[in-house]
Image 1: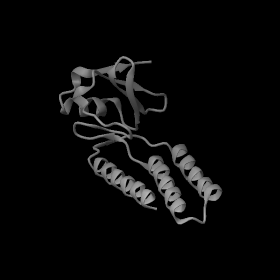
Image 2: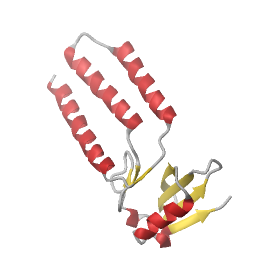
Image 3: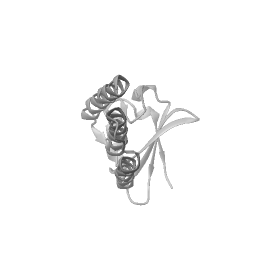
Image 4: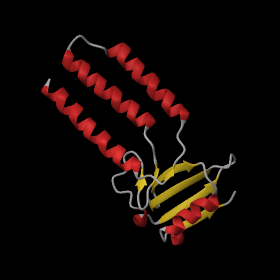
Length: 150
């Protein structure tokens, strides 16, 4: 039981840290409705198939379901000087070597943040290319931007 409580406490601490990061987002990335649907379906299936009569196991399962739902509904984007994305510990925009912006066919922008040639983080923004470029220009990141044209 103590193990289950510790897992739940650490998960809640992680969620609080994520919410604090999310509040700082200035430019919100587009979120996938499919990701939301899959996280809800997976959470329901886990509860249906793995529900137990043991309280400690119930707590572990509920903690895991909360984690899955959190990952499905979490906001991602760019704050003043950081990239806010799940799993990104060091998202300082000034540490990226290149920021690539590519316009997609539906008018959204596919933005890739390169730490090196083989390591990049990508997001889709529902804004114009000029708005993105002017946003990065506010923080003196214009020298990192590469615009790809199809």
